[in-house]
Length: 209
Image 1 (tube, one colour):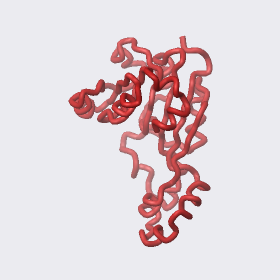
Image 2 (spheres, one colour; image 1 turned 180 degrees about the vertical axis):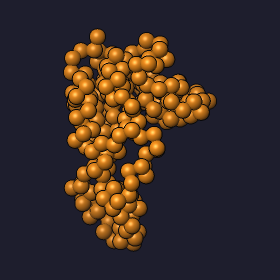
Image 3 (cartoon, rainbow, N blue to C red; image 1 turned 90 degrees about the vertical axis):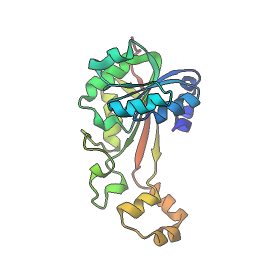
Image 4 (cartoon, helix red, strand yellow; image 1 turned 30 degrees about the vertical axis):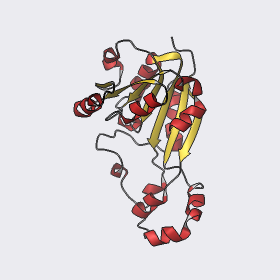
């Protein structure tokens, strides 16, 4: 992920200010900090936020949206990341409007998400297998790209995570010895399938005020 961001927005990683939304224990906050950013996180689960703070990370407890922007104390960010948290929002218009308000004039939005058309689900495994019960929506690749565009963002870079062989063994009930036999050929096949996850970098279409 950091490699994707380094290619898509290298200017932001050099001393920029970042906010990771739905950060859980703050793992990505730590990764962004190690990459040169001044990073914070926001997490709705109070217990997880407390664990992150015990490790010296700036993780604040609360939900991201217009009703809780006071928690950010008027701060502006060069990067707002939503890593596998995008499908937990009740109101996408509110969440993305809040992103726009909290971005600096050069800022960008980073989304990483499971996609509903991943081969993982082709065998009938329920989509809830990889997300919690709080999931409010689950999108295929085209829908995921359309949402930021609908709410005032331009998608400037994407990268896919291919369907891994280990997930095929679980989802399709393939024996490990079979996957070992097909080896690298499975990787070539995976590149022809829909992605398992998608990474998106988007910037506001109009300048942020």
